[in-house]
Length: 185
Image: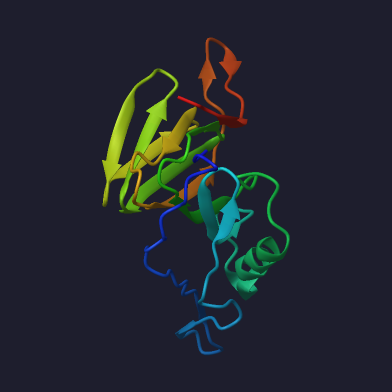
């Protein structure tokens, strides 16, 4: 976590809008007006701001009668209890504050993380590290990892899509979910 005595630099990342499509009575594609386009990030005490841009509780997603939209609207009102939704998917933006400490975690998911702004460090439990730059993607398979923003002055933004997965098996044992260990390295 960033030093409590330090002032966080002003967040200058672009505003994000969410545009969701649907279909009219004739089957023509239209923009959905039931979910607002303006988004608000939620501040986390862990040095990151998050926004769930879409979610669902089934794959394939049930698009008939806008069932997936109803599920997402429900998730906006009552947030899912975990980073992931069982048997489903989540897409979210995370803005990492400058100098925020890594948060170690593993979700039993297949994740795609694309750096939108800034740079972000991905650290694995093996000790391996990579700095991802704007446009880079990380594909994670139930990976125990930590993200951190190496910059002391600039925010970093990453867009994630997480799909529910079956747990990997190592030496006959399924790997388990692990959430929320802050590293003070």
